[in-house]
Image (cartoon, rainbow, N blue to C red; front, side, top):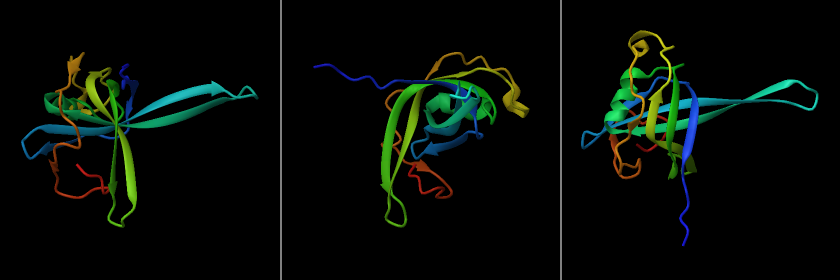
Length: 149
């Protein structure tokens, strides 16, 4: 029986600063959004553009590095797999989110300001294997966006 392939590769810029949290067991998990852009010429010869937003989740030591060295506007290359989660919000509505669970994160440039502007040679840091956003809960001081961590 043939197996499927769940592999995603994106190159884009962070739309927000990374958010680092820790599971009850002390494992780091970092979340951030990456924008990718596509452009084409329409029938009239005018250039059109579309931005797609991707939610990224990184685990372990790589998550800590992303939290320390990445910042809004920084270019990043991400390889990973897609994972869709569902839950009920506080009003009882079924909600869905699809995220890229990163297995490799490469920091491409140092365009961001502050400490994130330090060059960090993280050219192919493999993520910790075996982690899923559904199998560990992350401690948080607030319930933001009704998204289960």
